Length: 169
Image 1: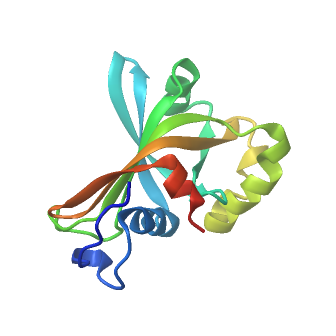
Image 2: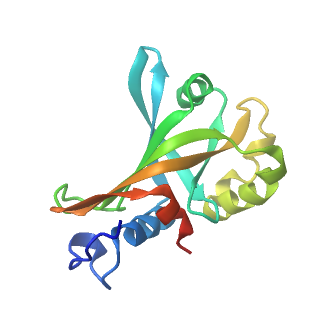
């Protein structure tokens, strides 16, 4: 479905673009987000964590997660997750653009790890040596969205398909 394009407002003011284009742009510019998983303790409750992220060529979030972290333990039990990304520096909840990517989050297959880790390090250079940190046992994860919730500002919100989101360059 094609959503009507309306005038931009708030911190995303600029050229008129579709909600899914704005979502992809916001995710690409963001570096920190809230990862929500299903908690093991207390069991079954939502668990939110601040994480650093990057993205693959389709805009799917990449996360470098420690095996010691609660969210990583939660993902081992249930791979369903969401990532909430918001406009950096936004202070007005009514006008604050945000995107929630809902999907599954799993370790990146070993054959893709080196290329995707290079993309991650380009966004977060301080993490270049973290994969060799055996104590924290870092691994690269990718969230593969099934749907994307986009809130551009007051009165402008929509759901976008993962296919539309991933197809943008």
